[in-house]
Length: 160
Image (cartoon, rainbow, N blue to C red; front, side, top):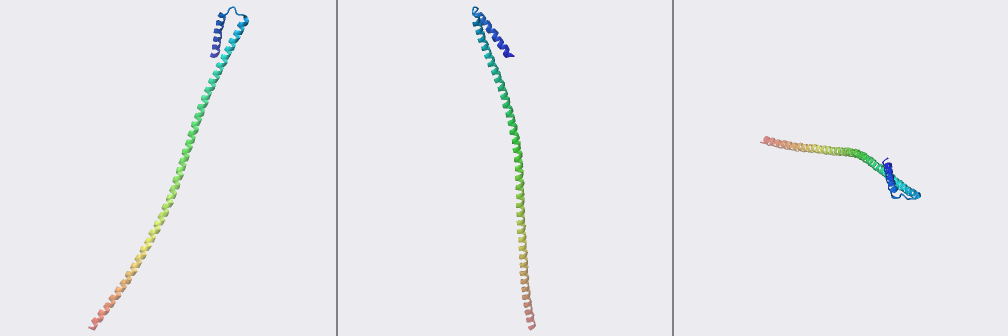
């Protein structure tokens, strides 16, 4: 609409200028000038149309770029969220596996410690039994010696 009014104004202003310049021009000369001006006006109109089309295309390109950027940012955020969830899952699994192996290690060490304690207890019991047997043997020897000495003492007493 603006473009049409601008063209009409340009056309009317050029008509007045040409009408003032040559009142004696021939009709053919006037027509050729008019035709030339019409071509110029048409060229300007086409140029303005092209500029308007380019402006619309530029606007559309900017809108497409903005939409593409928005979609890219949304995809990036979605991917980032997936990665965070996946990282959380991996950390949870690694922690559970670590806990499982730590528990197995603790159980194994506990069993080894229990075996060591049992072996030490058995060794101590055997040592106590051996010491007890040794003490009983020595006690029996002492009793036998005491009995023998007592018998010798009684025999001396009887001899006297």
